[in-house]
Image (cartoon, rainbow, N blue to C red; front, side, top):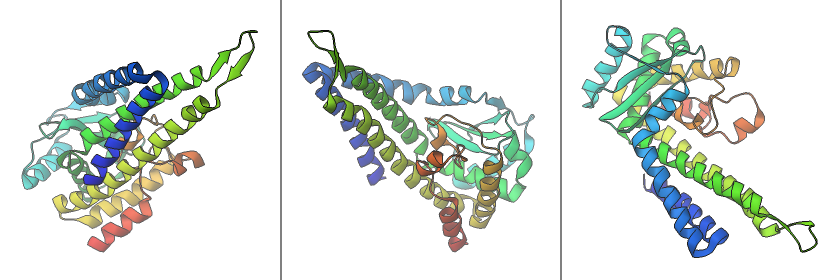
Length: 274
């Protein structure tokens, strides 16, 4: 958690430095105001935004009794509040958790994952998502995504400002500003990757403790990896880190800049625990 906090601090500092570099003291104040506003929106509304993006539909105990029973058993054992449950109408096999804290949390699963996994494997996945809620990763992920979005906005502004017109009407470029436009979002992406990968390993470990069955989650990850290769969800890159397995598999760039650690490493660690 200390490492994650430091990385979030670096990301926030990068936003402020971009504002200072581009607009001096006024730019710094604008950057601070934008970052504060975006974090406010992220804290209160990020769950509704991401659930709405994927058309997630809330289900009751009567509508999804088996899913409700598995989650309820896990929350009772872990001493956690019952989260809201959602089903995403998509055949891709995946799941994610969201919400600002354990009392305002939600777990969303796709129709595809419910069809693919047996009860033991599904229990492992649900325990992993509850671990994200318990470890407050859902809020951390939202803040990291928001900061990355702010940096992308400033990078786009820097790219626009990198071109100017001289006294004779000719276009000329500002090399320093062009470098900022390229380096800033790349640094943001690397920091976001580091945060997400760290939290995935922690959620696997905590989830295995909640379910008491690390091998159940290991089996689920093996199936989900194969299913994701065959039928990736095509999620947005800004929200890909929410999912239990990378929903962007297929292109080399998505694998290289993946916010998830390799499934082989995750499975090996879980097998060692088992």
